[in-house]
Every structure is written in structure tokens, then in C-alpha cells.
Image (cartoon, rainbow, N blue to C red):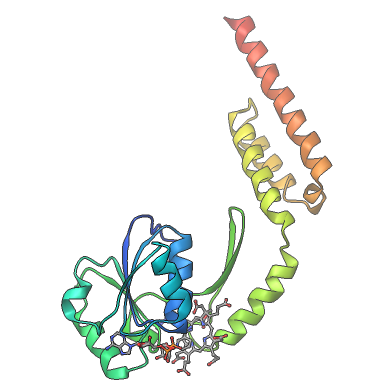
Length: 214
Ligand SMILES: C[C@@]1(CC(=O)O)c2cc3[nH]c(cc4nc(cc5[nH]c(cc(n2)[C@H]1CCC(=O)O)[C@@](C)(CC(=O)O)[C@@H]5CCC(=O)O)C(CC(=O)O)=C4CCC(=O)O)c(CCC(=O)O)c3CC(=O)O
Ligand SMILES: NC(=O)C1=CN([C@@H]2O[C@H](COP(=O)(O)OP(=O)(O)OC[C@H]3O[C@@H](n4cnc5c(N)ncnc54)[C@H](O)[C@@H]3O)[C@@H](O)[C@H]2O)C=CC1
């Protein structure tokens, strides 16, 4: 079974994490960074989960999981170390909930890739569970290749795209320019600045043409 790579908006979504160990913590951190509302259900929790709870960043219910705890969950993370509990949770899950089964990914319908961000750029690697460590290794290689400069570069591409789309250029010329800025030379800040300046000048030309027309 292959999972479909997609991006998901978890803002304000209710996520229930069953289990309070290392994997639960890793998921909690990812989910909190993306503004989900996280509840951890587990009789024991690692120190960092307890810390996040005391800071009010998540809710920790210090108990064994029961089916009623899953009510209203948009996403359920099944991450206990007890296969029977994991099995029960998957069976109790409301039909409409997404499920990530950390110990047996095929039992759920959501998988977590290894990923990193550079501003608006996000790069994820998945091996469909074949080798998480290979996914991590590849991610590290890609992190070196796409260093911190790429956050600013993607901002630059976004600004240019906006200006080019608003310009007087026809679709073909727009496409050529959008392609031109993919060249490595535009990783250079000075080159970015002068290119945006020239696009802005073009924009001003349009304004002038419009004013003269009016
Ligand atoms: C299917 C999946 C679950 C899912 O999608 O939820 C899954 C499943 C399993 N992982 C296991 C083990 C390990 N996983 C890691 C690390 C990561 N695992 C992650 C994802 C995934 N792991 C999904 C598939 C991803 C893919 O293949 O692309 C990462 C990328 C993201 C994350 O977890 O947030 C994160 C790296 C974060 C980062 O740094 O980027 C390490 C290394 C470590 O912990 O340092 C080990 C120990 C070494 C080893 O065993 O290889 C085991 C055996 C457990 C056991 O032995 O009991 C299973 C279960 C099984 O295979 O049966
Ligand atoms: N990246 C991944 O997806 C990985 C997945 N795994 C799998 O994920 C699972 C969890 O791994 P770890 O976090 O390392 O385990 P862990 O042993 O650190 O934590 C397990 C947690 O489950 C809780 N728990 C046990 N019974 C429970 C119940 N009835 N209700 C609620 N909580 C209960 C325990 O209190 C503990 O907090 C394992 O099954 C392992 O096979 C392991 C490593 C990586």
C-alpha cells in the first residue's frame, strides 16, 4: 500500500495522541508547531510532554485510553507500546477520524515523513515505512543541499511571481521570466534585489501608461 503525499492544514484541529513516549513526543512537537490542538492520553508521559502540559501547550490526560477519549478527534495518533491497546484504538476510532498507527502504519491512513522547512519551502522524504533511517539520512543530505539561503530565495520567487503576474507581459514572456529566476545566480541577495527593482520599474511603467490613458 502506498500513501499519497499531501499537505494538510491542522490549524485548530483536535488531535488525540494515545501513548506518552518518545514517538508521542515527536508527533506532539510536530503537531504543535502547526497549531493543532493536542491531547495526550497516557498513564505515563515522558518529561517533555509533562513540561508542555504544565506550559498549557497541550492537554495530558493521565489515564489509560478509553473509546470515549477519541470522540471528535480529527486525527488520532496511535503510539502506545502495547499492540493490543493499539489494535483496540484503531477499532474504536470514529469513522471520520484520520489515523496514524505508528507501530503498524498500514493499519492507519496517515504516515509521517521525515521533513524540514526553509521558510515556505518544505522538503519531505518517505520510504513508506521501509526504512525510516534512510528517510532521515536523505533528509540530512537535502538539508545540506538546500541550506538556510533557500528560505529567502523562495520569498524572492514569491515576490517576483506576484510582480510578473501583475505586469504587462504576455503569458509566454511571464513564463520565461518565471523560469529565468530559477537559475542559481538568483540565490545571490544582490542579484535578487536588482531583479525586483527592475520588475518594480516595469510596474511603474504600467502605472504611468494607465495614468496617461486615463
Ligand atoms: C511508518 C512510520 C510511522 C508513521 O508514519 O507514523 C514509521 C514506523 C516505524 N519507525 C520505526 C523505528 C524508527 N523510526 C525512527 C525515526 C522516524 N520515523 C519516522 C517515520 C516513520 N516511522 C513512518 C515511516 C517513515 C518513512 O519510512 O518514510 C520519522 C521519519 C518521522 C517521525 O516519526 O516523526 C522519524 C525521523 C524523524 C526525523 O528525524 O526526521 C527511528 C530513528 C530514531 O528514532 O532516531 C527508528 C529506530 C530505528 C529503526 O527501527 O529503523 C519502527 C520500528 C519500531 C520498533 O522497533 O518497535 C516503526 C514501525 C515499523 O516499522 O513497524
Ligand atoms: N517514528 C515512529 O513512528 C516510531 C514508531 N515506533 C513504534 O511506536 C510505538 C511507541 O513507541 P515509543 O514512544 O518509543 O514507546 P514508549 O514505550 O516510549 O511509550 C509508550 C507509551 O504508551 C503508553 N501506554 C501504554 N499503555 C497505554 C494505554 N492503555 N493507554 C494509553 N497509553 C498507554 C505508555 O504509558 C507510554 O507512555 C511502539 O509501538 C513502536 O513500535 C517506535 C519508534 C519510532
